Length: 110
Image 1 (cartoon, helix red, strand yellow):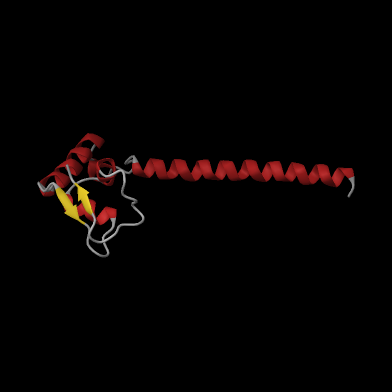
Image 2 (image 1 turned 120 degrees about the horizontal axis):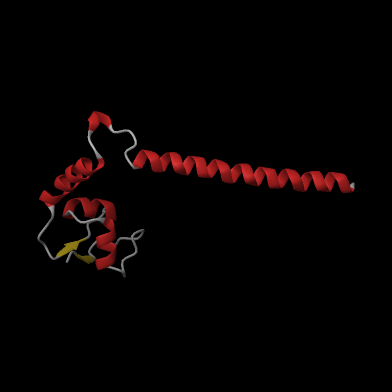
């Protein structure tokens, strides 16, 4: 290969990499803006939306100390059933692999 074609190939590779990085940043920032509530439908502020979100979760929190995993359960489904977050379940049960839940295993809820 000629020296100039190697140079051109390397230059195009750098430009393509830079374009990919810019595309990822643009996509990430658009998702971030959507999740931050940039579309405030109904004129509600962030604090009002956060308050409604907390009120919606609070009533169904369980008082049980443990949960026995059933066939077909996922960590997300268990979190919805018990009123805990997935992060709380993982913190209380660090030995549990969220990808491999075995029916009959007992999870701590407190």
